[in-house]
Length: 367
Image (cartoon, rainbow, N blue to C red; front, side):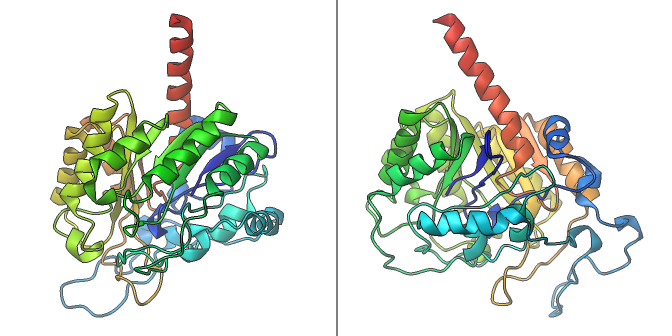
């Protein structure tokens, strides 16, 4: 799956690994360029005045009801002219999108684009079927997904180059049916992109069951950012994620990637609103920093269907802003925190792009 910022056509195709990986919507009162330059702002996440909202924001133990969506999460879903264009391009390329598979509520805004012609979509590598069944994600699952398309790495690279991109995020479903979890397929896609361009590449990867050889395969592909989502706090992990997706295993994956290449930027993401405590969120952030994770995003969990986990709490924009402050104090290179922030976050990628390009320029000067 890949996330991209378009240079020439101004189409932005963004990537995420599951429903949790949907994207922050551009608000109408600021241009996309201003948002990239200024970073996230509290008002970006508010529609109406949340301090005056008197609705229930949290379910108490034993409460079987469902929370109503608070005003700061109510957004219009326009279907702009780019919506049909992007959908047609993706169908022609036979690429799957997590936007559709995960029933993302932001699909119209992301694909439709804003007044500046910027649009987003989400594409998954290795098919549209996952071998795991996390209770927060609506991507379909199967023990025996279809075989990999051997032409996908080349086709994906060719499409990205044709769209005139300068930053791409590759992600995928989990493929526990494959010996290496699909690591070589992901790595080959990165290599095909690098072979054809100077595009910066971020990979949002599965945990590969903790297999260090698979992790090394991806790291050695010459990617620029290695991302793996911790998703939730340790106590809730067995209830939120598939039984094979362990909290400590995710930490191990991120740590192993850093050990393979200490200069590599590593990134993770946390969903809030599943019943976690503030102390648990802070501990999770500390665990990530302890193993050298550089970038972190925090966003609101949104229930994709009635079959999935209910939202236990709608976290206020103010509290998300506080978590951003905590992240900065802990020393993350970048912390994006807000109700509509997802693991693939525009301002975050813009920020990382500047860092990576500066590193590349310094390396060139030193040669």
